[in-house]
Length: 359
Image (cartoon, rainbow, N blue to C red):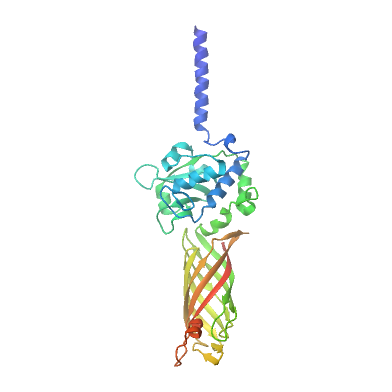
């Protein structure tokens, strides 16, 4: 009788240990990882989430037309592992294994209380204090990177969770993936490069651009001129400002300009303005003779707008392809206004590339 009691107690104790162990385990285990190592699984999750960068925010959305914060997490696990994670942020918080913030690794989840008292926002930690998520409010919305050090996220942060297994040996593989080697030859985990645009800090860089033809009478060449770019500035989480030197050769007007501009905006759209000195006398060679403009040998103001594609990881920085439209201040004196030459004398359209990196 006593033996049977201890025997039952022993087996009950074992079952409790097994139950406790299962409760402490990560929701996804080796069986769910489709033969991937812990590090490869995390890289695949991160690459999947990154593929949705720029997707607009849409409440209850789970596809490229729009997604909310838990929709990004749900979709990333579904595509990476064919696994249906909980659909809501509070459900994900209960589902994931609790970990200390000091133990956060790329691929873990971070949770926030932004409304009320329950968990209402979730993101995927990408390393270096950054996470990827779908934001519904703020200067940028949709799927973006943000920093845990930003005042809003620091204030609303409630904790971290782990859904994928982690092992010490995974750190080296994760680091290799972040440096651009990628996962399985497919989409790389580009955080190492993109993070240059999400970390706060000083940056510098250079670029070059082609200005398109003046398209005035007698000036239909595709080459209007070329320009270079040297920049330095400071980057916040979603906004950056800098100073730029933009030497330009304008073949159409036959002048060389040396603009000094201040730029501000996001990594996608920027506004720039500043003074520019013009070397030479600006003029167009038209079918019926030369058309001269004022401004040679003088400082004049200019301004413009720039739009860029998302940066591409290359070495320690990132490369962006961009286009811009700039206003440059010249005047045709007392002559009658002529649309094509005079508009083209004062505006230029350029396309080029720039390479920026964080200092």
